[in-house]
Length: 47
Image 1 (cartoon, helix red, strand yellow):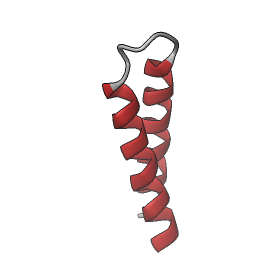
Image 2 (cartoon, helix red, strand yellow):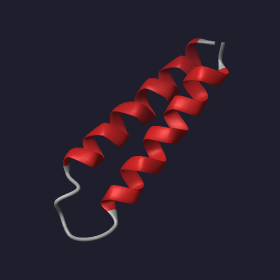
Image 3 (cartoon, one colour):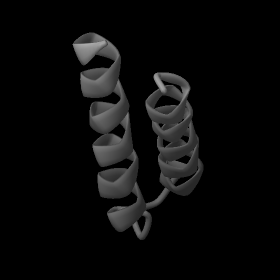
């Protein structure tokens, strides 16, 4: 369970950081959204 929580928080954090960097050229916005959703799914799924 600790592993999934860590992975979930890591992905959420990565997603948020990527969203903050969305002003950079490329598709970083979609990477941020994807990582954020994946992190939330893992975090919620552990319950």
